[in-house]
Image (cartoon, rainbow, N blue to C red; front, side, top):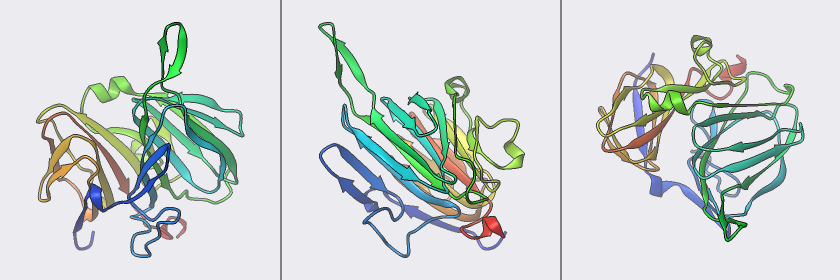
Amino acid sequence: MGAVSVAVHRAAERDQTTIEWLDSAHSFSFGEHYDPTNTHHGLLLVHNEDVVAPGQGFDTHPHQDMEIVTWVLKGSLVHQDSLGNNGIIYPGLAQRMSAGSGILHSEKNDSWRIDGGSAEYDEPVHFVQMWVVPDTADLTPGYQQLEIDDELARGGLVTVASGLPRYRDRTAIAINSSHSAMHVARLDDAGVVSLPDAPYLHVFVARGSVEVEGVGTLRQGDAVRATDSGGQRVRALGPAEVIVWEMHARLGEQWG
């Protein structure tokens, strides 16, 4: 490893897209929000925290050559794609879509309630969507999902999505990136996990607040981008949820 570098990015520093039905906070350049100094970290190109209004969502649109992981924090999201996949994503469900040579999909808020015998959309859906670069372009598109709520309830850092060989026997879903893994920890008050060693780490506080060893306090929406780092302890300051991307290459290196 080289020289350790750790940078804290606060929630309020993120670019924001706000329209009638969507509040979206972008950790990296996205859409019309372009900053040449903030395009990616390691192999992570997109890290959007979205809140979608009841009964609304993203209409059918295309993707190509990207591994897309969606992690729901509250509510539920309906996924439909041109491969014929149709699933409901909710908290504790790991989901990955490999865009590969090209895929069309839509995502809509599926949160609803029964009121007087009729179904009504009721609550926003809150989720994080993350894109990493695959090892190879023009792969066959694919989709995978798996319930992992029981594993998360045990505490610790749970490997949600991975292409790294070291996690092959314990990952929930596979991604076509042999240099990347995504982990999630749901922590009770004062719960502790240790970060993996990696050339690139992206640590995001999805809920609550945590104390990161050598960094300080991170609150909901805050993130740490580290290079040539690992081993730091993350301690919850009350109930918290943390998403960690572990990456062993950066953009361009995955093909080298």
